[in-house]
Image (cartoon, rainbow, N blue to C red; front, side, top):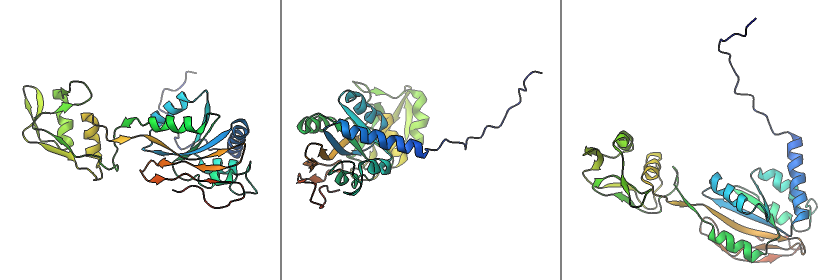
Length: 253
């Protein structure tokens, strides 16, 4: 008998959950990397973009191992107390695994790691909720796209989208044109969805993806060293160290 061609309902609510086995496997993997590498870094991410984090993973794939996400499992793997820590000093890293943070294992010297990440800050398009880093004004005349050099005018078929995003345009010789300057956003103010979309269409990038190195643990000594410099939010971070006997915090948010 031939199969029925009638539409069948397919449930989209069945999503495979992470089991205890998955969590256990991740804990084992983190601990194996603790035993393998000389340094364990704690890092935070500003203006998270998966594409940029994938680039970091790709560029470090031969000299590091990166874990990001599922912070509770990573913290448990390292051990959050001196009694539970996998190796001496690691609980000082584990206690700070909160929010958009990850851990990086490597044998590369600390100076090399900090220099590399200090230079890695690709720009990207802001999203709704981000704060504008500058006041951006579209001048009177043809609405130009900044994606190319030199800038090019928007095609005629995109005028409805521009008008939907708040521009008062008219067609002049087939080109969407402004009769008056239009302020897209003002520096320091939170972007609306329409503003963020318009900035993306125009080609203006206002945020920077950053990996802020907060601290690193050294396997040989068990010492946790806080990194000196700026965090992803621009706050100054000073450097200090702590040995395995000192229970004071060695990293500041």
